[in-house]
Amino acid sequence: MGEEKQELLKVFDEMKKQGNFDISVCSNIHDIEDNPKYKKLEMTTQQKMQLSALTSQLPAVAALDGISALSNMPKLYSVTIPDGVPYTLMTIKNGNMTTVLRDEHGYFRGYANMAEYTSPANLALSSAVLSSFAVMSVATGQYFLTQINSELDKIKMGMDQILAFLYGHNRAELISEISFVKYAYENFNAISTSDAQRIATIAGVQQAKKVAIKDCEFYVYDLESTLEKGNDISAIVDKALRICDSLKLSMQLCTMGSILETYLSQNFDPNYILYIENDLSRYIDKCETAMLTSLTTLYERVRTMKDIPIKKIPKDKLMSAINDILEPLKDSAESSLKKTLREGLHLPEKQKTFYLNDDGDVYVKAV
Image 1 (cartoon, rainbow, N blue to C red):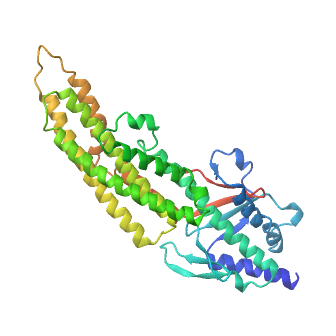
Image 2: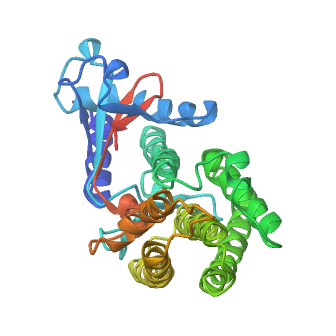
Image 3: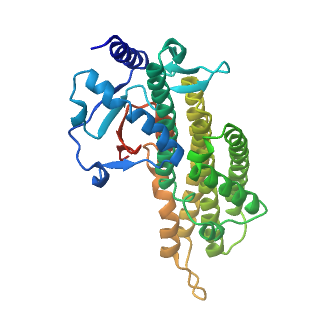
C-alpha cells in the first residue's frame, strides 16, 4: 500500500476515533428501499449531492481497509454515531471547516480540523464526512418533527377543524401562530440550510411560544369561571369542552415550539434541555390539573342533578363527553404530552445508525 493511501486510511481512522463514529459496509440489509422497518429521509438535491461526495469516497477507503475488492463493493454503508445526531458543525471564518465534538451529555470533547489534513485526498474525505453529518443532522430533525407532530392530536388538525372549537378575541392570534409553527416544522429541512432564515424563524417560534403561554392562562381562567355562570348545563358543558380543546391546542403549540426551537438552534446543551423539560413539564402539570379539577366538578354536577320533567337533559351523553377528556387526566402515569416533550427533546442525543447508498439516499430505522 502506497504512502498516500496509508495516510488516507490513517486520517479516516483518526476522524472516526476523534468523532466517536463508525462507517462500515452494510451487507446484511437487502432492498432497504422496500423494507417497512426503514424510513428514507427527505433530502433536497443539494443535500443528496453532499452525501454523494461521501459515498463516492467510501469504496476506496473500504478497499484500503481490506474489506473487499473495489469492484465488488456493495452499495450500502452504515454510519453509526453513538453520541447522537450528530456533531455540531461550524464554519470558521479563516476558511477551515471544523467540527465541535461533544459527548452524550453535550460536553465539549475536542475539535477535528480539516487544516490538519493537508493532502487533497484527505481534505476531500474530511470535507465529505463533515458536510454529510451536517446534512444527516438536519434531515433527521425533519423526520423527528414529523413524528412528534403526529402525536399532537390538536396541532395536526386541519385549520377548519381547529376553527370549529377556537373562540374569543385571541382566536386570530392563536391561528396565526399555529400556522407559523406548522410552516416552520414542515420546512425545517430547507430553512436549516439558510442561517439568516433559520435565525429569523427561531425568533418567530419564540413569539409563538409566548402567545401559547398567554392563551393557556386565558383558557384556564375561562374554564374555571365558566362553571360559575348560568344554569343551562348543556351550554356550560359545551363551552367547557371547547375551552379544554383550546387549552390543549395552546399547550401543544408551546410543546412543539420548544422542541422546534432546540432543533433549529442546534442547542443541545444538557442544562438547557433539562431546564426546558422541567419548566414546561411543570406548566403542563398546572394546566392539566386545572382541567382535571374543573371537569371533575362539572361531571359530578351533571351526574347528581335532578331531572326536570318539562326539560329532558341528556345526562348520559353529557357525562360521556366530559369523561372522554377527564379519564386520560386521571392517569397517574406521565401524561402523553409530557412524554412527547421529553422524547422530542432527547431524541437527538440517542445513538443513531444511518444507511447510505451511492445515490445519496439516507435511511434510518423507523421510529
